[in-house]
Image (cartoon, rainbow, N blue to C red; front, side):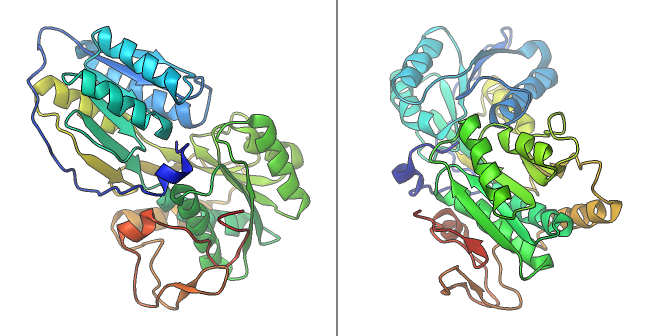
Length: 365
């Protein structure tokens, strides 16, 4: 997840990999030793849980050919560099770093260990032995906004958000556009946390939004606290990162899930067969990296079918969240940000600094 605001605003990802070198083939007689570094403990749901599910999927796919190590709850900064250096020294051939704040430490360690391959998840700087990858989270946000609008009686949603960086702004805007595609008068209220992981503050923000009339919630933070709060208050919420019905069986509308298993498997296999090369991937619904699933028991079948149908259309490239088909799209200050008949480029999406019409809040708070 993103941690450094200034650096995050400079993100520049492209979907097609940019290859830089072909390393030597790994020893086929020995299992590949891969490490995964997590920014939080491994919980039953959430950001880190979903990355660990991807690790387990890679183990299942590669069997005895892959041996993995997990180092969890690693603070971004000096601690991360120390952990990465230790992993590289101890013979790990492939290291996945699953938080934006690990990017710079990984680059520094990679310079000293050119034979070790690093995968920087959500990072944007690459090197000969450092690749980057991220997902188009905003695609799932748009589709979840459709479901939220169908389930909301008040037309008011609350959004608990970590930092006002492009990735988060993309999600808020796509969610709002999805809601307003169903209910043009829908409004989204935002509370900024200025942290990724603080369950108590996430809960307080959710309570504040519900007190302000929101009957459906979404969030961009690392715990399940928003889901728990919605369950307690009898409101609805969109789970993020992973399925959270275990703590919010009545509140959960659906889950926007991140699917890392295929990517991790492919990258580990590439190290094994000598085809690994530095590059960048930005995949979404079409590539299977974002998926809507785990509908709650209170969601009508008609709503489930509508959302899944829209997901199929998005996978076919027939729905783009940041396209203005019928009218100009304006920000919440009244400026045209997507002209009628046009769509944002990837570069424009990645540099997003505005909030769309219908959002109550400021990107700079």
